[in-house]
Image (cartoon, rainbow, N blue to C red; front, top):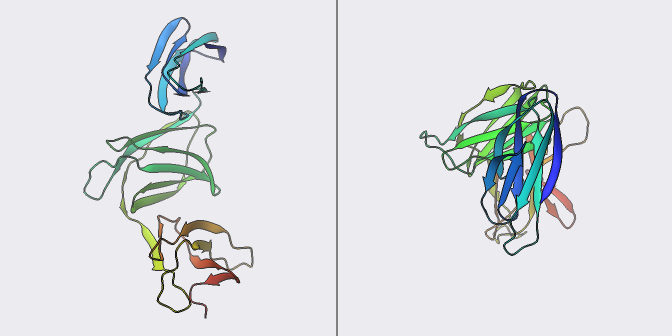
Length: 239
């Protein structure tokens, strides 16, 4: 068992983000609010649900099952001031895309991420809400960005995407003979700058067994491509 007391400043709904190694049952204020079935290995936040809280003290009790592994769980409670971002992600034909990755960035720093379900639906709670953020959605070779999205505390925002092909750069790394593929070479997309500041590495991939590499769904902008060699970096287009 695990026990805590949640303090709430008003009668409202909080969001529970829960994960456990095996099954679990959760009570709040003496009422069962969630049964969690065994979903395999522990993963934080794989169960999301809303729970009404009353002003003041809200006792919370967890009962954890143990099948084979050691007890493991994590619970995060987000207050009503959280911002909720939700919607649907579809391919160019309008079909829902499952397991699409949704990421929120603030000043190039990833704040949070989630994946869409089998119908392409996603939901993401953000706390604290940034005044401006960038949202990236990627599913295989499909992707999209939305720059400068405004989120307000406590707001419910609906954003849906129909993704298109998002392969930004693709190529092949070869040996000095110009023919033999070179595998497992780090290839980097480096931000192109003109003000003399240091260039930031925005993405890194490895060439495959055929020497091929791809960058999918890079943030809109200008880039230089370079690969790591024994003597340092070799930029695309350099002799």
